[in-house]
Image (tube, rainbow, N blue to C red; front, side):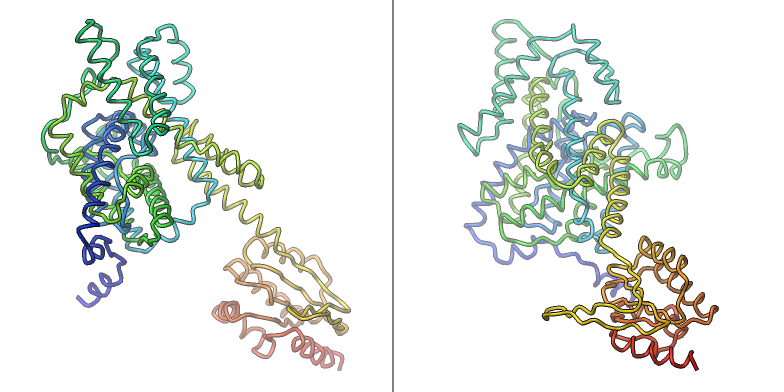
Length: 573
């Protein structure tokens, strides 16, 4: 029982709503109400569009925004985070449904939620924020291109019933059906884009996507009512309209992979679930970090991850899809005065009213208009200005960015993130190796006094050579060190100067141990110089200090040279 209490007390779970309500005021309430209503209005077209683009429907998008948004606001570690479905998940969700069906998506989402909770419990929030920036830019741009490509069928009204999932096949299919363009669809889609682009010039607070939907829906209604023209397909023509409260339903837990067992299903969906969890963690924490910079607050990463996890565990039981923190809606919340989680709760209530009362209106929304909304979402996600700026930076960053982007577009996000991370690690190791240096000194050496003028020339006694290691002594440098020491005709006494070794890993320790044992077998003496406390603790833990003797581990090169001279005289005798 004590261990359980100790474990629970160590969990970093501290929802911001508990703190903000202690100091709540009428003024804050009015600001949160206004912000929540506006964000709810902004979220309506996005939730519907993301649900449809993901391969489910408008109801699922709205349900996710309501339930996940509520949980994230109540339990989250950010004061102003708005949660719900986002464009980043469209590609993953669509692919999962194509391969495993809606039941497979529910299982993958629950698994991802459990992973997110565990990330928060084990305090991995801070680590996840250090995802290499080129990878984030690369997969975000890749997702933007993929979302754009999925909207061509509705934008041009091509009427393709079964659009291929593969990016290249998709575009081949589009060009094969180019003669089937519905000019009404194209006109409505382009007009929607122009309205969204032009709205900020009229009003910064008026949501362009909502205005486009209102205008285009009214236009299509008027054409059908007064001219007898049904120009394009609407949501109601293709999907079951939302009505009533979301119903609790148990996800299909088995058989989504062709009658296999639940365990086989879990194994098949594990990579996808991990990708959903990582993407949800990255996007939500980035959103929270951006919000912190604007409002001068500080979010709790681990609490935020746990809230995101709980939201993703719950939403599949109501037919929802994966959710995370939404940067655009979070910024809309901040810009309209939202400063506590109450604004996020109000936003979910607005969406709930839409779900309960405005199903008929939602059904009248033309599909090309939603395509225009998603095209603008993809444009805003693309980050082309950031990519243009990064193209002026190092080649390694450019390589990581475009590799991740192309893999996301051509294959899928799971492969893109895995390869991107491996590539980032390899290039990082190469950079560290380039900054690390091993030099061998005989006869004399320069002693550089940091912060003081002038250098001192030190004589190296006869029969002594100094190996100076500059930089971390990890596996890449350790291999270089082994090759260098093996290739030389060794002196009887060998000093390893480690004053600039910030840490040593297991490979470095192993190579150092081999070096010391080989020297002992050949009757040579090894002296370690300039050993920091951190490195000393490491070599002592594996028994290297005992092997060469405590007296031969020294904190300065002067002492090491004196000790070497004493040993050299002893050898001569």
